Image (tube, rainbow, N blue to C red; front, side, top):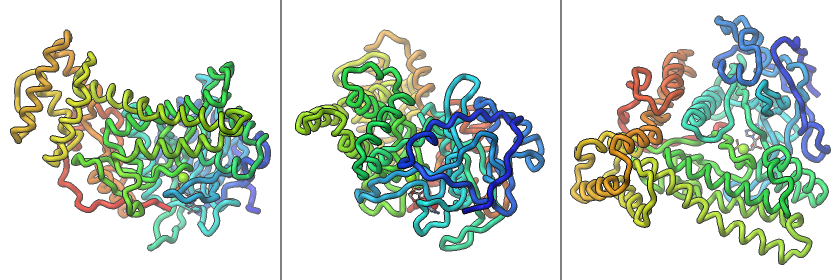
Length: 497
Ligand code: AMP
Ligand code: MG
């Protein structure tokens, strides 16, 4: 269909082994990236490139304009061993089932790293595919820079996530409401197997393909479950556990994914598809930033519930593999899904204990944590800053709150700290490890993206990225982003399509 992109020399360190491309045809459609007019490397993730075993120097020498990166990460030049394809998947979008597939993303292949790990290398915004429907297959620069920034920030916060290797500007415009500069993001993921991938195969009624997908997922992400008595039930349980842990971590740092459709939930437990995502400043569980989330389906505090809803959709697809008797299959799936709430709560509470400097467990801890969240809500307090202020308050009895109720809460917490054998110093150290000093706050993110997109000035973005590389540090790189900025009222995020 499209002109064949040129092949690059093997010296860049590519080491592809493309297992997904070897799956039966129902899973994908082969397609080459559509070349762009004038690719230019805008961002390049040197440490990630090196971890992948790539030759960072060849791809992006000091003067980024000189290297091969622009051609490779735009799709103009195919790396040696790439077998480009668009993945087929379906998904519930805001509750409605739709056939989707990669409409603007192209998987180049799976890179084997020197450490023996396997990562998908995917170009997002690389041109039309069989699944593009009415879309142009392209992406705008702003949203691709945003995904790069937030995914890398999540990684540095210790939260499982897809990563970002590069952003290339295309020299072409994309047309949304306005003409916008176009870009391609290179996304790196443990895989791109989604709940929606299972939904797609299940909806095609191909039980053999379903078994192939389930076994492939087990081999790729849960090899330890191969010998389980019922491996597909074990798969469901393991995915459930990883999602519970993931969403708990989101809540610990105030992250709102924004579009938790089933096509945006990864079987390996990574955060995926950064569209309208954003972080809370002031604490309110009903916070929604996404312009398309009219009903608050994906509001901050609703995320555990939606994860469980998505897992129920996964469980439905797996029923034929769980047990030959459908009633028994349903009972097994239900039992697993019901345990989500408890698994999530355990994960969430354990992280909240660490945020409060607690090493030990007491029955009243849940109540203590909820008491604090009520205070934050009542006071419209900044979520991130409050926990860092509390860390400072472990030593002296410095009041962290202006209100009497919350001062009372603080006294309760101090008593609780006194009841554990660890010192106040130990508590403080624990808190500083679990409460970031900086997060990608909406105000700073918008400021950095605007400078890059409108003026070609990447300095604010580079400085913000640097600060977010070590979010638990409170050094000179972080100083400018520590104090909560003026709240952005009525902040809205968009899907970036
Ligand atoms: P998302 O909201 O990013 O998860 O995307 C939902 C679906 O729309 C996926 O199948 C995407 O591949 C597809 N899509 C999004 N933007 C475009 C575009 N510009 N061209 C073609 N397909 C797109
Ligand atoms: Mg998606």
